[in-house]
Image (cartoon, rainbow, N blue to C red; front, side, top):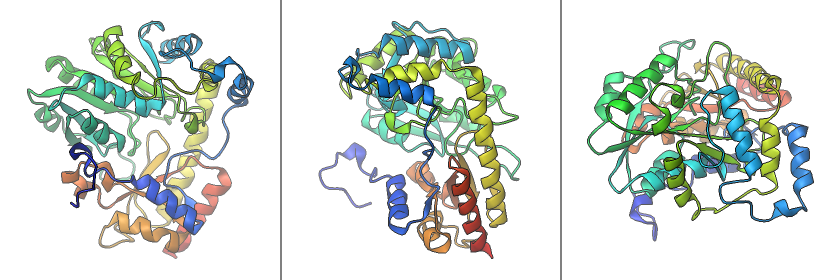
Length: 396
């Protein structure tokens, strides 16, 4: 690996993200961008109107460090409504600059140099970078794709337990999972809880896709399991739920001592953010249940459109249980199985952009995802229809 000048040793190997490369490719070629996971429709008017009304008011100035009291109260009420655990908005809820800052601040706050973090791969790319910035060490456990498209990704419980050493400090879980679309079931969560309790681990769980779960799957927070609330920090955000990814309003909930530690690190990152968007997010979290079931139902329809189109293009795909994404095996149309090469050639071949999955693995495990590519389906009907038609022409 060529060393990047001036970059610290702990961040060597973390170059420009593959998302940036693929989005730039979409922009220069005019291809349909099914790579980066952002929706192309506005959020609900009930949320947007509150943000518009807040601009030009004192909300333009610094909000309180932990977040606006009305947003922290709304987060607490929302979590209790949908998940069960109750959190005190005055000490157990912290507003952050998106889920990424919540995760990074938590890792900076809780890890000492050399501490190990057990997590599953493929993993969202910020995890490994945040662990590295904190001086920690990633201990990755692979998720295994199913043998057929109607199965689910799984993991080897013995391999998970073997990943825990005396230096392990924290278990990092993402469910619903990006990029696989897996939703960890209750039995799997019970395995994780037993491991965390038995090894006295802290738990950090990323649940930003909590409301984007499809028929047949159920999202359960690890914090809900017996004995887990007092050792678990739960991260979420409003970007995916309300089509406001650019607002970067996230939050972290957990026991007061853990949240206090995270707040210590967070105050030296962004300090505060998104003043006019915080009251809008509070309004969104208070929307009726029908809104949340409706967005999942709509996205499930879009999933089915894309999955059918990918099958028609000769690309084996595991139908995701949740999230914005579907993963395909490119080997039927890319005999060498090089997912990155496939993505770089796809704009010319089909006028579509996707994202290779190899970069979602630890460097020593990149071969596990070399042949896998992720497509996003959080797009308008006409965009998905055009993308599916273009992919179909590729296989003709």
